[in-house]
Structure formats: C-alpha cells, structure tokens
Image (tube, rainbow, N blue to C red):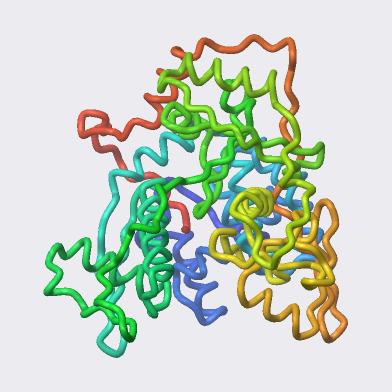
Length: 447
C-alpha cells in the first residue's frame, strides 16, 4: 500500500527538503504510523524498493516464509546497488534469508556487493578511513566507553594484541578475567603512566602483576583470500577474522605484506586442510604472484591434524588453529556471529565417548556450548548445522563457506605490477586535493 501511495505523489528534484508534496506525504505516513518523519521515510523507501526491485523477497514475505524484519535488512543492505547486483542478491540470498539471522543476511549481501563492485568498495573504504576517530561515551555508574573507529585491520590487530597479552597474564597467574585485563593493559599502555592506572591485582603469595607479556606470541591477523583473487583473476572478497568481508583490491594489497599458507577446500567450500608450510615471499607483487602459483602447483601432502585423534580433552594448538580456520564463527541457532578465537572448541560427541579430533570438534560460543547441555541438540552436515530445541523447534544454520571460485586454466594472468598499481590507487586514502568542488545537494536517500 505504501508503494502504491508513493507512486501517486508528484516528485521533483531536491524535494526531500522543505515543504514539498513529497515531504507532506512522508508526514502523512508519519502521523498514520505514529513515528518520526525520518522513520516514515525509511518505511516508504523499504516498501518501494521491496515492491519494485525485490519481487522474490516480496513473494516470500507475502507467503509468510520471510519475517518482515529480515526483508527490511535485506532491502536496506542493497541501498545504492546497481540492478545486476540486486538481481544477484535476489537469486542467491532471498530464499536463504528465510533461515538466516539478520547479521548473516548482511554478510551475504555484503559479499555480493564486494564481488560485483570491488573497485568502488575499495574506494569507499579508503575514503572512510579519513573519518577515523576516538570518542568517549558516558555510561551509567561512573563508567565510560572509549570507541576507536578506523580501518578494520588496524583495529583487529590492536584487539588481538590486547587479547594475547591478557591471556599471557592469565597464564602467568593473574586472577583477573580476560576482558578486565584487556582494559587494564590498554589503559596502562595508552596512559603511559603506571601510577595513574588502576592498581593491578596480586596473586596470593606472588609479586604484583603488571601485564607480564612473556607468554604472548606475535600478533597475526588471519585473512582468507581466494587464490583467484590473489592472482587477479576475480574480485571475490576475502574474509578478515574478527571483522568480516574485505574487498579484493584491499586483500591483494595486504598480500604483499603477508605470510602465505595454503588452505585446501572441498567443492562445497568446506576447509579440509591447512598447510603447515608458511611461505614468506619478498614483499613485491611479482614475488607474491610466484609464491601463489607455487602453492597451487605444489600443495603438498594432507596433514595429520585433519584426521588424527588426540588422547586429551584440550586440542593441540595446530588442531585448534585448523578448526578455527575451518569454522570461522559460531554455528549457534540464533546465528550470532562470535569469532572462532573467542569461542570454545565443542566436542559434538562428548569427551571421552567422542575423541578430540577435527571431525568431532566445532567452534561454539560459550553460551551456545552451555545450552547444548540443556537440551539443544546440534546435527552437523557438510553445509549447515541443524539445531533441535527442547520445545521441538528445528533451526538450520548455514556454515559460512560457499563453493570456491572456478579457476580458468587458460586465463591470462594480469601483470602483477600493473595490478598492484591499480589496487594501490583504489585503496589510497584521498587527500584534500582529491576532494571535488562543492556541488548542489542531491536528492538525499532516506537512510
């Protein structure tokens, strides 16, 4: 109904500001819906886009298969997409959205966006980096939040550094929780004055702990990149652990600074092995290209961690790493995205009845792991996890992976230096000289 009414309102350029026929219509909707003008504009935009550009999604809503909120998330994530990208979302995500959580709908749509318009996504990311900031937000009970906003890789590296130091302090005997240690170590490092920070707790019979980092290891940010993207044969996005999908140009830029490891996947996209060999090519596009081709041509033997059974409850470091790379995020029934590094390694068949082995371990958040022992029963398949609730509900949670990109063996590889130059320009943070001159305001989007 909103879409039909909106189609009858005369439209003129720049009619979203001031007293116009369009803003008058939006206020009519706001009064009828008992909401603000901005909320009414959002409602109208979603309705018009759903009817005009998302027929398959609309049909699922009308059939009662897709909740309205999920449809709204899908439509809002498609704002600014060209028609081809919207058709791809309709074909690949609409039916899946019926069983995906909102966060996973956003991830699925973003992956398509980055695949169809990787260059524009890289330019937007570089432009957004100019807005990096640090803010203080007041909280109740004398507390506050420090919010750092900026490039994803830098933020992930800071978080992983704090996590590694916090776990090292715990291993050394500090009784504080990991979250509390992250804060205390960050406050100590940023303030630069140990006397000004919160006093650090002591362990009975032990000296004062001041963030002992001797047990910590070098920080590594894991980025999974399709080999076709690394070679410049496709623009499929990569996955940055702790963040999400990253555009192909940005991934290729990071490859020149990365250690490379081969990840073998099945035809369904499930990780079946992670090579033990680490390749450290010279940080040049040509050397990285040669290293990628060598990894493809000489993948090596299947490692023992993919099939061995370990005689203990806690998996080894190598097995833990393999399960984290394979599963990436928790497969809980509500689809809440909890990273593997912050999740338990849950035995599907409880130990010791079931072994500590890759096929019997799954990444699950602490709450999901606990609820499994309260009647929630998971059944893993190659592509998803079926959850059976105590009340008899059945929920299917798709695994994060999908079929790997096809490799054209006859394709001509682009020149690595030329590709690097193009990518470097796309991800370069714009300067004042790049800013175009002011122009008249365009018709503002309702979001």
